[in-house]
Length: 158
Image 1 (cartoon, rainbow, N blue to C red):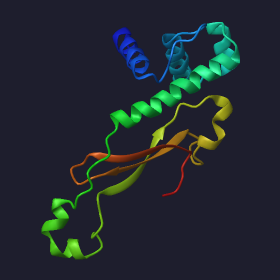
Image 2 (image 1 turned 45 degrees about the vertical axis):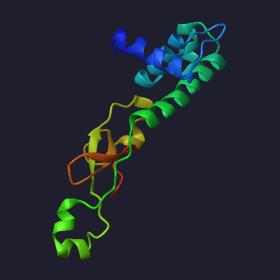
Image 3 (image 1 turned 135 degrees about the vertical axis):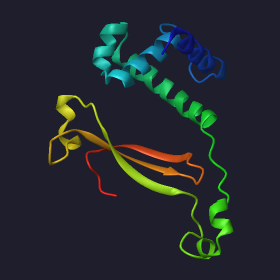
Image 4 (image 1 turned 180 degrees about the vertical axis):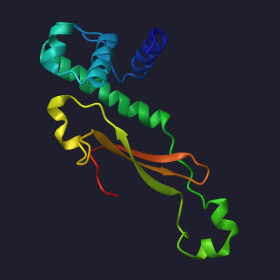
């Protein structure tokens, strides 16, 4: 993330009141703690040494930004308008048959996962031993993603 994007994100969170400056830690530090924690799988006890705050302040800051991210997701992710797809509407067999309530299609794929050695066992597939996470996605008939569920460890069956 470049500096402009980081400053803009912090400003947006500050203006909305999702993350506030405190006596000992400001919004920018809280955001940096959150982003570094999720990007590098950092633990609170490591972050306390880097940012020179207690584990309690690190944890509180992380969760404050996380709650702000949930608010941001509601602003940024707009649910689709579920109308009957044109393809189903114009074909009587599809409209009255098994696709009567269809809004899209679902498929799953495996994505190679970079997992710390201590956490690799649940993510391993049994043939070659590579680490994967399973991602399920749903698309509408215009090929737009309308739902994505990522993070299942290993090879979960459909």
